Image (cartoon, one colour):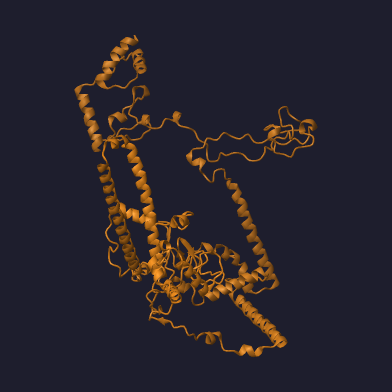
Length: 625
């Protein structure tokens, strides 16, 4: 029977879009309705279509659901048509609304956890399973919050504590979990109202007592029923809007410090980068923007000018005096009692000046010296000076101000042992010394000109190869007859041409070291070459070997000459660089340090020869070879 019904229902449903469930079809068939829905004719379809169009146009009332609510005719059919298992009997939109059986139930607004204990039921004897300490049934002994008893309620059976409330299992939604007033009892507000009522009643009673005692009306103004007391005025004075503020109730903002649009903006008064700082967040410029320009008669000199001029400093001093007086036990306030504060401050300053004058008079009377106090002011005594300083119209120093010397963290210009120069101001033969006496011993005592003459004589008696002035042996023989005059002239020449002799000696020593290094390299190269070509050289004759040695010697001479030329060029370049560095930066020519190119091998060798390290422990041995 069910299969026959399904065979009947499915094509009928597809043809007529019926949404009747199978159970309704079977029930209607049992009741004698035939079991099949009536098929609509063409006219019925046409009338249904016209009715739908008329409902959309508004000429026919809209369809009504089972609750009496109108159904919007513009709702599409796939939304308005309920599924077949919903079991609707007419037009409805109930299937689109939240279903009550699927909605989660949340706690009501008046539901909350109960506080305290349940005093409605009080136990008289210990119950099984209760707390052994206090006797309550809602917790165990380890969770008991009462003071541990010497003998628990389990054994005494007396003083049984009341049970806590059985707390409900609350199901709170998103807003309920974040409600700051959740659990608030409105009956608590009645206590505040009762307190205010008692205060008002006390005021009325006090006013009645004053009237009976015959107090004037001015003293009764404080207890007037219509107005509040002075304490209440001070309490609620902070809630009043300040003058000059604009409160917008719609936007909930406060606009302050509205400037007139015709005024010049603070950041446009001086556009220099080193001008006064302007804070865009607070729209404040504390320093004077015209300070660098030297202008005096200006309409704006920064906010600090207003803050520290006029009676501002006087008010700050009064406030400090009020704080000190309050700390000392005097009840005074700068804003509440300004007249009292001013009178106290005047009396305080007067007494302080009297005590100070009395102490000063006592000292002068005891020790004397009052005549020295009648001298002219310090401004007149110290205003005149021989130091010449020239100022510009703007007040800046143009001439006369000495440039401050920047010093390092180490001690400078510290002379020890009677020296007039520091250690390291003199150089000779790879050693540092003192320039004042030519001494090469550190921390030695200065011998002055005598030691300088002795050290210069020792320098002249050095061998020709290490003599700073570069004189030969032939000059020594020529000067033997006139030894006294030659010695004096040599001393003067050594003192005058000290720097030139040092440079020549240094250059000569560098060339000797270079020649020795090159000789060692040549010897090493020859041994290596002879070792590799030992078999080939046995078959060669002596003429070929002599020609090879001559060619090698020619190459060495050329290389030696190139190194000498590179040394001379480097010395000239150093001199030119020192001359350019000594010039003013504004007068130095652009790109004045010459071209930039890769140095040659000879220039690199010359640079290495000039790089002597003073801290090298073998420097003395290398210069005396």
